Image 1: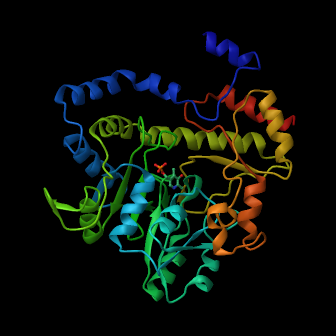
Image 2: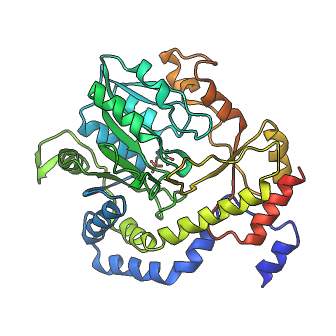
Amino acid sequence: MLDYRSAMSGKMPIPLLDLRAQYATIRDEIRFALDRVLESQRFILGPEVEFLESEVAAYCGCAYGIGVSSGTDALLATLMALDIGPGDEVITPAYNFFAAAGTIARLGAKPVFADIDRNTYNIDPAGIEARVSNRTRAIIPVHLFGQMSEMNPILDIAHRHNLVVLEDAAQAIGAELEGQRAGSVGHAGCLSFFPSKNLGGFGDGGMVVTNNVDIAERVRLLRSHGFRNKYENELLGGNFRLDEIQASVLRVKLKYLDAWTEGRRRNASLYREALRKCAWIELPHELPNSRHIYNQFIIRTGRRDDLISHLREERIGCEIYYPVPLHRQACFKDLGYKTGDLPSSESACSESLALPIYPELTPDMLRRVSSVILAA
Ligand SMILES: *Cc1c(COP(=O)(O)O)cnc(C)c1O
């Protein structure tokens, strides 16, 4: 009652994401699951991780799931499983989170940046082929904000040049394109369970999903120091394990994921309806035959600074994803890119803005966000 009244009063804060609102709906179940792990005192690679692996793999339309310590480590372990390293090149988009480019470079390989499609924010398949060289080993399309990349032309290029396709599906669990789920289309997919992802744990976590038995087997060895048996190190791996506590929380949340995704999609439609006539704002574009899961609802405008200060005054959360394209990051200076090299990535960085989209937002809250924008 109190919350409802203050929502009506106009200045109630509306955060970009409110995980407490989600927790309130599942508190008892989560505590029950945590208790089960606490009583067992089994914390590393036990039944919770095993169940979660098969449940998430099935959800993604994959035969295998390997729980790992983060989305970043999912990418790292998969690239290690593919033996990617010095002398190799991997093509990946310039506008997205740092993880794919960072892991490529950490293994001594070279990230080769491609531009994005200005409408979807995903890698533009038309720019990939010109970047393939005789050193190229893989393509990492990133399914940004919850929508899958255009996989058919990417797979086609990969097939012609004998390249591996690794999907960064950290923001796209449950997203679909032409009936296929994110993570199941390329050779492997990498998921993140960072708390702000659509399926978020109570800390870091991730998973590699794949239909390729060799990749599955190698990632499974690599996540535990390459142990085949205890103290027999077959591969040079690391400690990339997911723990039982996280897995138990994620198993509870997975049951609600589709309902939450529908909530995000409903909120996206409400925004579309409310902001349809707002000529200075561009709404997100959905590909035909695609299920966008709206990890983020991204609008774009040439008046972003104005809009941000207006939203802040009204205590409405918003965030710039991502302010600097990867090819202009200081750590990639030596790769020699210049401003202007990847224009769609650069303009997305200067025009895009994320609005609150989490499923627990009420229609009143969405109306308030929309009317603040319309009045800006
Ligand atoms: C969150 C994210 C990652 C990394 O996941 P972590 O679990 O934070 O390591 C990778 N790629 C994308 C696109 C992400 O959004």
